Length: 436
Image (cartoon, rainbow, N blue to C red; front, side, top):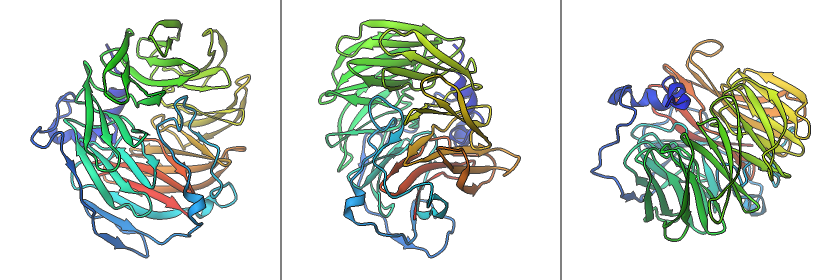
């Protein structure tokens, strides 16, 4: 079956970094000698007063304002912010449309090996968790960027972590779902699926819900990793969301599924005109998805009936839903803002999207990544902040790269800080933090 994500990644940083192993071997795994081992050491910080390129395996740290401990209590626990998705942080109070233009680099972490690609950061208890193309899961100090630990899987990690009850859950292209001790990186358990795990887990009610490219959605015990059920779709599963006892599943077989969260029984499915790789977002009884058929869909969460659709170009990323507005990052280069109730277009902004990065919304600001092989910035990886109400550009950051640069992952925003993974073409990628 045709895989649009892998075709897109052939141009993206995640595959560019793996050119050393040969582009035709996208299913090859990393050497196994260190697989399954956590590395725990704190790396030396190198304070800087101005931006400069990071050493491999090093941290560049920059001064920042301090808003006190009370401002550092919010967590971005998983890809969708919460298990139902939507990528909206309603508790952000520091960054806003009034001050986002003053964002500056706080720190940048760059590993010694292959860098970061499609995995999006999660943040909990002062620690940033993220996967990388070198096969590692990293834990970084959220305030300084210092590496706390890393855990080596058997292949590249494009899944985004979910953190719950002191455990980090994440998938790997080595076919496994991992549960790691959030404090130490020690493995709690792993579960082997039949293919790559690109899907980002959603954790709810003591269960880890995740998809695999073996065409199945899985429900695993969060404590033991034992399988509770699996459901076979007709294509690779890229995203799941959980809301009100129902698991919503996006599949490459052109369908969106609703499954009973306890049993895996099918409740309904809705067929689009092409691949559904957009992880679902569920809000106020509606499921929002994008499809490669160039439409965004709003579906009744209880019945699957279509409420509306909007022609937004091919949409592979997850949608953000905040305060009655649906935000879309499209492969046609636009970010769209649509009314959640009717799908009417409120505004669009061209140039801040390439369809890989999913938007995040917090306190009236939309954050999204983009990439440029050549054009406005040849080989650049960009991160944007837009006014969520008007679409006006508030701020952008450009990392100039050699070859193809990409912010293919999706930003996380919490406590006045924006965390994002930058894939930097044939060079190593980095995780960066931006704040006031």
